[in-house]
Image (cartoon, rainbow over all chains, first blue to last red):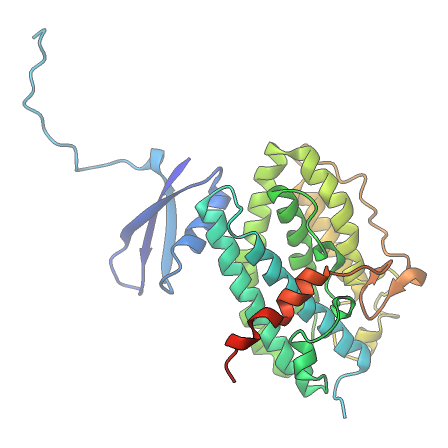
Length: 69
Length: 254
């Protein structure tokens, strides 16, 4: 299962998307994120199942017209 | 003149040596994991365990133990590590099921030390150990699904060895020499109970049965209180040579 990883260095900073990990369950995903992204002394580090992430923006509008229209 | 009673020095020596060999095993297996994340975790834990060992070396040196000897200039059978780390028999799941009980046992033993000037050191180690032990448990849960027979078989060997490292069940509040000396605040009996309860809960909902584990080990009369094991044995000579750093002495800096 894919998990997106989010973190901030200091309290009050913006929480940023810093990468992703793949793990068999939530518990292991937490540890993988901790071990893999340990370049900073994070104030906050979180994982979110990629399947639970609901995107608000980012989908490009398309002008494509399908052949059967 | 030692401030600690001799059994306390031996107790910390066994913990320190377990940390050293844990670091060694983690480093040896840190390119053998099933994923990059497992390898990174193993390499990171290796560094932290060696860091814990070095802190204990300073404490043991202040109690009169010779620093070169502490740092590895000794025979294989003079390393008093938990017996489950002597060798890893098997593949990566066997490695996890060998190091996890040793690391948890060592932490419970450290956390029981009631020496005021070690409080800060123990708190810092506890911050590292939270992640080591949580990772081990998370991995044991997944391995219990993937390879229940292999995990069960390894634990039937390594859990009694970790219990021998903790100490005999007979050492309760009234008889544990370290409690009596005021060096620890939790008896061997209590540590063993917490250790057993943890693993019974961890595997309760899995296909791994712990019914074949000898939860009464070690037999008091057969227990070596200095090496915290029964039946002798040690790391291999190749391990001892690597821990001594003999081949790399040329590159050591004064």
